[in-house]
Length: 78
Image (cartoon, rainbow, N blue to C red; front, side):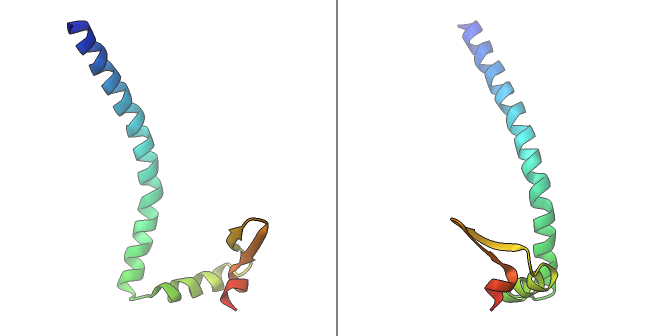
């Protein structure tokens, strides 16, 4: 019985270590997005304003990809 308990504790610790690495990587992706959102909120920008900024910054970058069709920011803006 004690060995089963120890085995379960080891399995739990292993799962936590794997999850910590995954969660840390996710946090590194989320932090820049959160910073941008805070900046946009301070500037009172709407979703449309942010989209137009992206159109000006990346007019030929893919905005929507669906099946075999790709629309750029400039295509979607019209």
